[in-house]
Image (cartoon, rainbow, N blue to C red; front, side, top):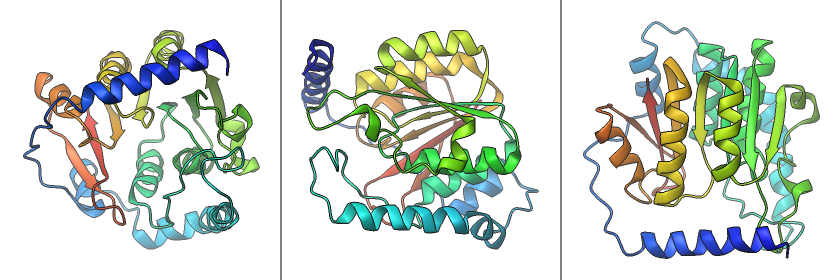
Length: 254
């Protein structure tokens, strides 16, 4: 193992252990449905479920074939470095696609790629928009992970609008955002620890354009999301994953 990877692994373990010492606060926000969230942010949108499903048909098929192939592999291993808990009615991926279709972003930044499931939904929207670029930050630090497996599920035809920034977000995110200036959307889906999440929120927020969005996966895993929106006097929307009871996506508009 490379020394930097070892340090990153140690840091992630220590952050996780530190989170276990703190009680998670109750978030007094009722989870919203996919339709409620769209109606709240885009009351006059005309992108119906039927239209969305039709536009995503090819991607659904591609990802379904990918998941079937990965089902036969053993986790953790070089051939299956990440757990596979994706399903084709994954609400967060569909929401990311729809959001990007509606606001037609120029620049999107995400942290955490893994196989590239959510990444594929974003890139599909940029492809359909015929504009925009996605910068994704990810890094490998466990012995069974490898750089070539990052984003392996992303269809080849969607990769033109994508750039992988390889390295930990602690060092890469500030540099990337400084080089980009303002962005339309930031999506956190990397290490879900308080220290990492609050760092990424605080780093990304000043770079998000007015009316732009910050999205974060797994917002109930610690107090970072709650503390951030309370401190900044923001009103979040929370999307509960359709097939994962304890997984929630948080959405903030600037």
